[in-house]
Image 1 (cartoon, rainbow, N blue to C red):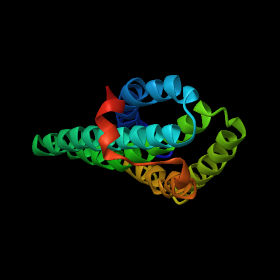
Image 2: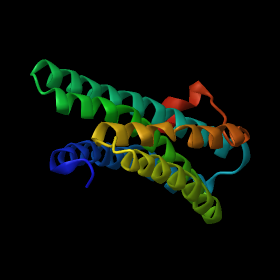
Image 3: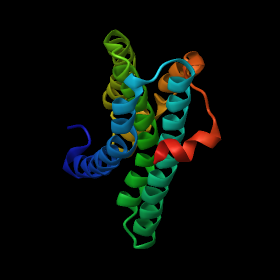
Amino acid sequence: RYGGREELGYYTLGLSVYLFVYALARSVVWTPYTKHSPELTGAELAGFTGSCTAHLGVFSVASTAVVGLTAAAAGLAGNTAIAWTLLAAVPMMAAMLLREHVRRLCMAQMDFVGVLAFDSVVSLAQVSLIVSLAVSRRIDAASAFLAIALTVVLPAAWIAMNRRDFAFAPSRFRGDWL
């Protein structure tokens, strides 16, 4: 509303790109994790969780690189507004994929209270940042995406606090992917 119709269109473009990437991540990372993790315990679960986290990392780097290259192509074609929006969407996508990863890990372990607490904190941070941009009349699609990206510290902190639940064994990554 504060940014106008054009900015809403740019925001919708960036959000649509994220939702497409999210759907792919859901299919290739989180659905297999949700299916197989309840069968595992202890070190096997920690290893599988580490592998799936590594898979998400690779997927996130690849998908954000494609969006970044698309932004560069838009910029070279002279559409700087779309280029800037897509470029700002890159860190937002990485942050939101990490947020969703934490949510999916908790849900697979039936930790619904943990999901609610985590979502409440992250949502409050994101809404607070976006409202502060709107109140200061500095909101546009790119600044909204960057504000969301700033909250990446919250899922990263969750992973750091729960690092005992992750075992990163590169020898497992390929086998767990297939």
